[in-house]
Length: 292
Ligand code: CP
Image (tube, rainbow, N blue to C red):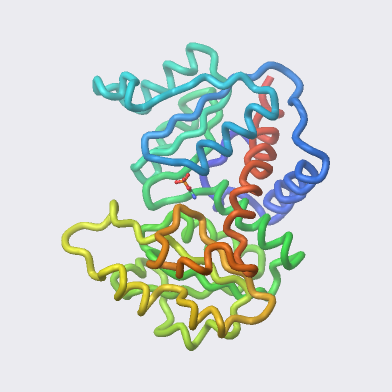
């Protein structure tokens, strides 16, 4: 694999191989990767989980990590993303983790640079390593995906997490249902109410309300959103006993999920963050082993 830009590019076998490698790394520990490779993390949008867990994985793999701060880079002088990547290619970087607000930013890079691109999130497009860590967390819990009922609830139209997981979970045989206000459904079909789905879902995956991607006046107050579309304490009581709660983070406490449910026994939210390090190490290994 030269690049990882979208879950659409991965076959079922490739996904399962990455999940199995992450499982091994979690069991045995992340070891130094042979050879001397240099990577950099180019984040043009805020991030805590993705940036930090990539950096943790890179350090554990013994990679050289060149620091990059978009707010102190020549992007501020108008340098394009393409020219930034070509500059880092010339300097000798092997792989770049890139987060950028533009959907499909990677299309102008792949095939025009020898640097491997790992997509850390493009606008409302894809977030493949988030999807892989979500799949890893689900597999740890249930062992497989076939026939699992996964509910994705929240700001779906603006969510690269929803888009990546919809592609991957369907490919792996899960039944995916969506719940959101009609205005935020995008290309997805939303069910009408929590009552239809809460009692049968194995995974309840909440998504953040992405105020930064909304135009015009907000449709909901925090309270009205929570009441209509959030996972309330009352709704959580209707979940199956072995069902789990997931959220990619960052979460708005009391909006898409009740504050008290973030660290409840059924929540796997912090487990998802932990698993992100192993998934990102597995992806980096897979990408770097193809380089010479
Ligand atoms: N889940 C996720 O992508 O979080 P960050 O924006 O903090 O990286």
